[in-house]
Length: 146
Image (tube, rainbow, N blue to C red):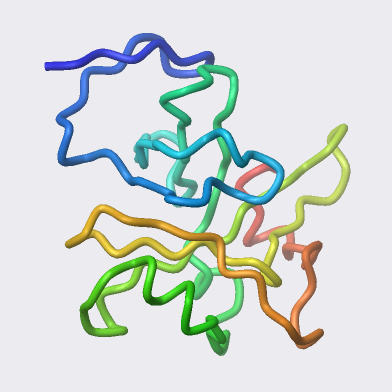
């Protein structure tokens, strides 16, 4: 079984089927195409996208519906095509969380990360409208960073 070193979780054993492939990388991380989704119970409900190419890159994320229960996904057809065929209900929709310098935690609702578990593919689906923000403030009771 392969092992990857990580900055925050030490060495992690993983199965190749657990790898999420982002064919185009992520905006700002175009050379990061292979990630693991880590669920650490002590940090729930946070999830972590750990890059397999760069041990330093680990993105905290939350399910979008935890941040905004009424969130409406708007993904481009080309993004959905990259994920492969499957029902929309199967998609895991996450938002990256940021808490720079211990300031108010925010979530990126403008560009959610979509993962189709059955294909092992992922994409960051940047919206082309201004309905949501890239820095949506989390309420203190929502914030896993407080």
